[in-house]
Length: 269
Image (cartoon, rainbow, N blue to C red; front, top):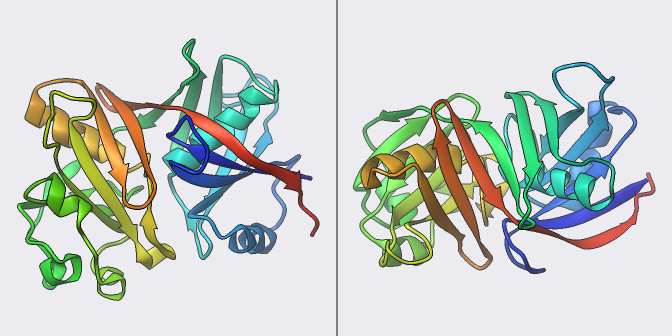
């Protein structure tokens, strides 16, 4: 079967967030899916198979880190939609049935793909004991997110603080359900992006995820409320970086970005 590595939320190879993508006839047993994801060893590997016509979704979609299955993943959904469109397997809008509900991905005229995801709720919480030490920076505010995400959104003082983080990953792994999203307003919010972030997920086997689409379902309402605007652009990453354009539509968040296939080959196993 064909396996592809796709860099998501970027228009050039070796940037953005890489994901493995496999299009299947059906889902094999979970142990096989987990073994493939561990072998690929990227932050997420997406597995998808077509569904019968006439239903509420066109494809079934699951995502696995090297160690566990997750409820929601933005960049691997973008990568899957890119493969479907670039191979001619699908056109227009593709609907996915996933653990977090029905998601969709629409190919745009400019070559981008727009994901339609549920908007995350945000609940102000006290900073967990040890968070500042584990991150290496003092939080300005901490918010918990919805169940399908399970991250803490941690606002920090400024962009430089976010970019300069060197966390204690072992300590961070004990402080949230899925991970920590560190964020701050951009130094020049009138420029190409309005906010920055980095995502740390050691609890699910990923020390740092370069461009986390699902996290932007929380970052979008967080920063849109601050700016008083429904449309923003976020910049995320440490060593690898990418951009996510966000649009709030009530209880849905639209996430737009490019993707590029970097590797394509045969999977034996």
